[in-house]
Each structure stands twice: as C-alpha cells, then as structure tokens.
Amino acid sequence: MTGNVRGVLLQLAAMGLFATHDAVIKTLGGSYPSHQILFFASLLSFPLVSIILLRDPTSGTLRPNNPGWLILRTACAILAGLAGFFAFSTLPLTQVYAILFTTPLLITVLSIPVLGEKVGLHRWGAVIVGLCGVLIVLRPGTHPLQPGHFAAMIGASASAMVAVVTRKLGNRERPLVLMMWPMLGNFVVTGGALTLQYQPMPLQDLALAGLISVFGLAGGLLVIAAYRAGEAAIVAPMQYSQIIWASLYGWFLFNEMLDLPTLIGALVIIASGLYIVWREGSGGNSVNRPATAARLRNESVTAPKAAILQRLLHPRR
Image (cartoon, rainbow, N blue to C red; front, top):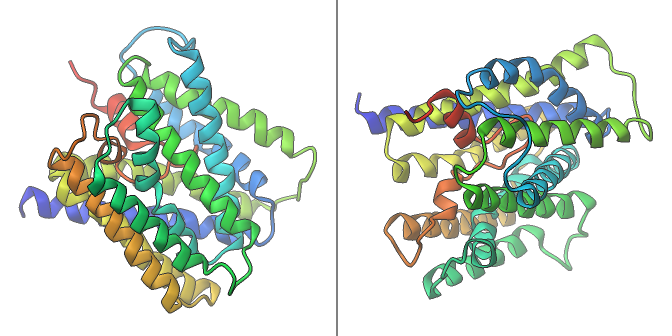
C-alpha cells in the first residue's frame, strides 16, 4: 500500500469519527442545551488531553507571548464550539456541513487583513461561487431561515478566524498555550451558562458526552497520521467525505433526507473550496497558504486542531 493510499484511508476514517462526533452532539441536542453538552464534553476530554499536553517539550507558563491575538483566537474558538454544537442540535446534518464547508472560503477572505495575503481573481472567483452555493443551500425567500442556519454561519466564520490567527502566530506560542486557553475559557463561559439553563443528565448521557471527546481526539490523531503518510493535496479533499457520513447518519438515525438543493449547493461549495486549496498548493499568489495549512477541519474544544496536536506529539528537534 502506497503512502498516499494509506493517507487517504486514514483521512476517511478520521472524517468518519468526526461525523460520529457530530451525530452524538445532535443526539444529545434533542434533550439538552448546546452549552451544557459542550461543557461536559470538554470537561470529560480534559484527562485525555492532559496526557498529550504532558508531552510538550518546551518549558514555560500559560502566559502568552501575543496576548491580543491569543485572546481573539480563544474567543473565536469558544464561539465556534457553541455555534457549531447549536447548529448540529437544530439543523439536518447535511445542511450544517454544507455551511461549515465555507470555512476555506472565509479563510481566504480573512487572510487579506490578518496575514497580508494577496488574493487574485481566481481565488476571489472561487469565493463568490462558493457563497452562491450557500444561497442554494439556504434558499432565502422560499424557506424560512432558522437560528441554526445563522449559528452554522457564525461557526464557520469563527473557525476561519481561529485558523488564520493560528497561522499568524506560527511557532511564537507554545502548543500548550494554544490548547489550554480555549479549554479554560470554554469552562468559564459554558460553566457560567449552566447557571441560566441546566437539565440534569443521567449516567448514559454523560457517557455519550464523554464519547464526543473521544471521537474528536481520535479523529485529530488520525488526521495527523494521514498527513504524515500521504501528500496534503491528495489527503485534504477527503475532508468533504463528511457529507456522505452526514447523509447516512441523517437517514438512519434522524430520519433526515438529503434534498436536491442542499446537494447541489454543497457540491458548489466543495468545488470552490477544492479550487482554493489547489491554487494555494500550486503557488497561485499565496505566500502563507492559510486555507491549505488549516487542513479544513473546524476546530472546537472537543476536536482540537490537528496541527497543534502534531506539534505536541511530533515536536521538531
């Protein structure tokens, strides 16, 4: 088996775990508020993440070198988690994924002010086409927009900002700092929200919340293995296989059907995202390659960024 084939298979398995992560969120979302699910899922993920954090070879404290950028990244990571959990709880899985797939497009736009990227006509055209795909999915005027649609768009925007700021910081912050600040901030925000709305959880539902963290972390580890085995240009497009998992889970578990406008819109968004990744990979007016470096997975506290996990598990000597 060649490295690229192994990388593709590992990435497909990772996307299956991430989709399962999201399906469990939707399962619990029918009974509990999204901030409560996020609180317990992140709380139960802490023992697993702590084992990885102990591998950080660099010495220091949690004090950031770039506090302004790190506060912005932390706030966006918390917002991405809250918005994403709410969207998965209230919308069909396929619609959420179609909207979240706009993240590479938004990364391209945000990279202009944050990274000083020069975006040419090709990538601007891809962004416009991708946003047209969002309109196809949302069908404004024919179907009423729900709070979950706005939450998904906010989640995609926040995830894009997290990716761009992470690229901006580079290696100037310890991986421990990049992971712990969002976790601690999430505990404060979601824990405080529990005082406003809380629904007691039986043991089996707490176990499901724990599974969210297990699936998220395992998916991130498989993504690292996939990129170490194969070429990024071949491995990265497998991210979009999540729409297949979403269709299957939606059909079997939630009685959801993938309608034609959502399918067409998702294909348009996927095509534009792949074009942007291809342009960056081929050197098309991109210095920082922000969308390619983001590896196209929306980050949350329960699904930490694979690049940060990789810096912890495989530090450069």
